Length: 519
Image (cartoon, rainbow, N blue to C red; front, top):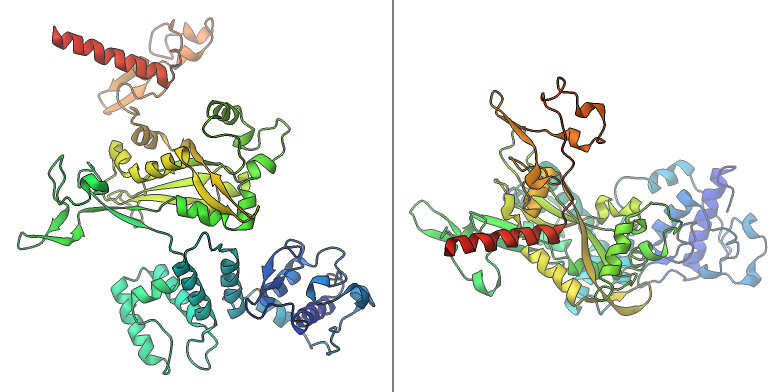
């Protein structure tokens, strides 16, 4: 069991003997199709199918000191040779294993039927009845059934695997839904009858979408005034602010309700949090910021920083110090999804990262959540707050009321709250997201109204000067005129003003402006 480097052929035979022993002693659940995995990472705590267990053992090796297979049909009394045994416990001879064929089979690019079946079995095992409704559980069972159903009699590919390969081909080559539907109809006629190939694009998509994670398609005003959602705007056909029509005009001048002018996509955050906590491994990772990281006053994670502790102390009454509470980071920027050289299109995705996770996971693509997709071709600018309304509603609910989820790690229902810890943007994105001035005569977000600017008429550019204000008072550069703008710098840096002070100044200026108008 522990001689992988000395004799590969001997080790592969031992792995195959182990799999045959586990199946012979019926430790592999015939209903669900998975067994305990004794590899170094799973340590008999996770359930996998025989094919995945074989892969884990070949790539990772056995767990230490697991010489008596107590979780795979063997008792302590049966140990008669430890790892020297190569034959199965039921007396069957060891299979003739070709090392090259086994390794190629393990690392082949396409998914095996057992691997697909095992992934779906784990989804069913992780799904708690309190999380998924009976209708969604039925869809999962149908998906597992499709993973076992052959595409046609004698085919080596299952119905689900064929559907996944075709949809991957559609995505890779950018096929339209109409073109993909025509391809499905042609393939269905070419394949032997009967076959299980989907007939339409919608049927192919629904085959791999059983979890029921909602996606809201929200119509938007052409001028980014409102979203047609909620009781106030849901049933309107034109914007109440700019009176722009909701739908595009057709050739005869009438309006059709099948083609809105602008659309935003919202991916709800709360159902995704429920799915994360329904998985025991993910529920444990979400507690890492409190229980997993080293608390040695070294800055390795935002949880080690002073800002994290200050915010926790300020919101202790409503938020608390519970390890399950979620800290989000929001990021957004414009992009061109059509890979064009010219910047004539700007789509804005809004993503969320979860700072509860360790630093090597929280910024990985698999753990980033796409929350809002704002379609182009024109960027929303300062009106981006209109598109963030559904996300802010969910975050406010998560902050004020919380979300009751099933924690698979602790095997109980619990209340989870969340907060938006910070935002990650470039300078123009910061201006759109917060409404700050990031260009023009007051474009510095630190100096504000004390920004030193100069307009260059020959190049039509605005440049920001006055950097010598940050030097020490008696620094020689302050008195040096020729290399700079010909003046001596006596000014100091402007004092820092937080949000409360800025709000107070704006309010006082508005009040003084109102008094002047009254006079």
